[in-house]
Image (cartoon, rainbow, N blue to C red; front, top):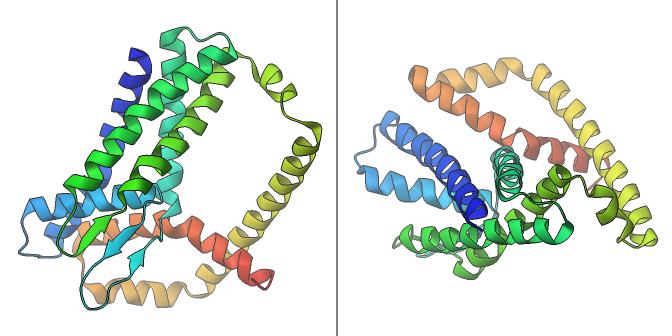
Length: 239
């Protein structure tokens, strides 16, 4: 139990601090007169968005934001996976039941922190969906850390045989098609970026962002690169 809580705290602290830190640096680089508390709330909202928690906009325009930078989401998932392995090792997980308890001990505090972040980051113009903050981060953490714990405990075969054969066949086919689709999208994205390299350089130079700002723009580009691959793949198949 304590191993899962400690691992969740480590992942939350690392991911939240990294995203909020980038938001503060970007905010200060842009020459904004807003204080660091505003930048911290912005970074916290981005952290929630990375977990696909909807941000609701108030005011005349209204609307909502659900567009998550998949590159950051992949990074968070990778850290969750690592945290799940550490928690399973520390708790001595050996069976599927042990793995389930480890994943639950990780996911529950993770979801709790997400709800707290959703409440603390609320502003007059932007607020996060509380019920999504309670569900989406926790479900993601539960699934990822359970897989990590199962792998560490070496009970993949036992977990695999419990899945119905028909589900396995469909899942295998969907996975192969998805990987092919993403690979195609990545190829198209690289080709498009190569052909438009001059325009990209001109756009970056036109921002006059300086060294730090340019580095942040490059990081943002990498964060949205998986989104670009998905778009390119959808375009290729007429989606």
